[in-house]
Amino acid sequence: MDRRLVLFHCNWFDVCDDIKGVKKDDYDFVSVNPDRFLKINEPFVLADQASQGFYANDNSNKGWQIVS
Image (cartoon, rainbow, N blue to C red; front, side, top):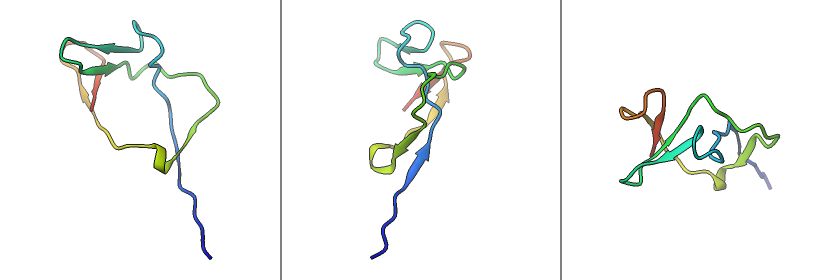
C-alpha cells in the first residue's frame, strides 16, 4: 500500500494585528499587508486544510493586497 502525505510550506501573513496586518472594508473585502508576517514556528499546513485563493493589489490602500 502506497501512502503519501502532501504538505505546503507557508509564510503566514499577520492577521492578528487589526491595524498593521489586516483590514476589512465596508463591503467585507479583506486586505492584508504583504510586508507583515507572523513570527511563528509552524510553517506547514496539510493539503486538506488549505484552500485556493489569490491576491490583487488594493487600490484603496497602497502597498496592501485584497484576499479572495
